Amino acid sequence: MRSFDYTRAANVDDAIAARAQTNTVFLAGGTTLLDLMKLDVMRPARVVDIHKLALTQIDVLDDGRVRVGAMVSNTDLARHEVIRTRYPVLSQALLSGASTQLRNKATTAGNVMQRVRCGYFRDGVSACNKREPGSGCAAIAGNNRNVHAVLGGSDQCIAAHPSDMCVAMAAIGATVHVQGPNGARDIDFVDFHLLPGDTPWKEHALNDGEMITHVTLDAPLPHSRSAYLKLRDRASYQFALASSAVIVVLDGHTIRDARIALGGVGTKPWRAQHAETLLKGQPATLATFQQAAAAAMQGARSYGQNGFKIMLGQQAIVRNLSTLVA
Ligand SMILES: Cc1cc2nc3c(=O)[nH]c(=O)nc-3n(C[C@H](O)[C@H](O)[C@H](O)COP(=O)(O)OP(=O)(O)OC[C@H]3O[C@@H](n4cnc5c(N)ncnc54)[C@H](O)[C@@H]3O)c2cc1C
Ligand code: SF4
Image (cartoon, rainbow, N blue to C red; front, side):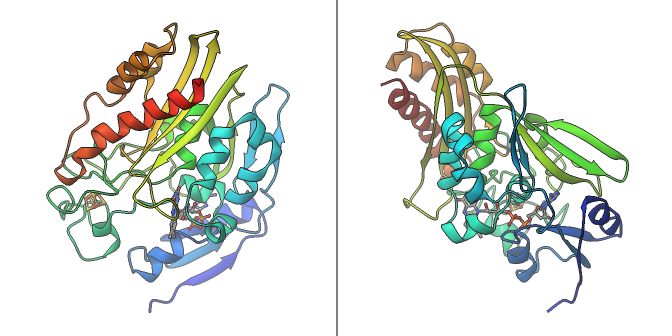
């Protein structure tokens, strides 16, 4: 057992000041962090508890966007009337994740910042460039069926981003608001999570010491309908093998606008913009959906066991679109 210091922050400034010490991390709901500390994968010397900070509001802004506090629980976000009615894709994505107990504890910021589920990362001993830079990647030629990506991987890391919520946010469009020692700034959600490239240990665009305070969702597309479809081995309490967040606007039988993002198949929440372009202005037919789905998975690479995800990712899009327009 490793000892560590624990501080509870009274406000955001307090939290940022406490975080300035080396090897210090924020503790929100703890459903990722405490697991990884128990597994000896994360070894902070200091933990700053931000769970009780007054960042639990969900506000509709004058321009139609919705601002979500970093400490809003996954349950409260999923069940909020504005989210259920204006962003069904987000509510469904949240409710498809983890379990009721975990969603009650897990926070919006913690979900954005959750770590990968790769077994080699979590076992604390295997070759893993993310945990131990330069040690190699045991997953590339190893067990990579469930939680490894076919899009966005590198020869350094192929772990899939595990979040459902983030896939919905990538489709909706969002801004991550952060505060740190050098003040506040905004990061476009699509730029927040980083591809592994040669630096798989660098997972997000936060600078050292910065804290997420809010996430603002773009206003919903007028007259849109949306849904989240998660394909997995077991119907609950399981990460996605492939998932899709789809938003469409129909004009009769023609697709006027579309947003698509994928989960389970990419090393970050995967926005499929080329597929969206192919859908716009086209008739809402199976052939159109199949063409867009193929485009979304273009460039996908099998690492052996996870090769089936290339087809499954396409099916997640086609099925979701077919149900939405029916
Ligand atoms: C058994 C199990 C099953 C799961 N299944 C799913 C699933 O199906 N789908 C899914 O999407 N997720 C799943 N999860 C993951 C779960 O959603 C995340 O653990 C949770 O969202 C993390 O939120 P948290 O508040 O508990 O974060 P914490 O564990 O408190 O923190 C996670 C990380 O974020 C950092 N952090 C927290 N808040 C901030 C902040 N404000 N600013 C900067 N950094 C911050 C922490 O320092 C830490 O590194 C599962 C988890 C478990 C344990
Ligand atoms: S896929 Fe990434 S997290 Fe998994 S072993 Fe390879 S480097 Fe580590």
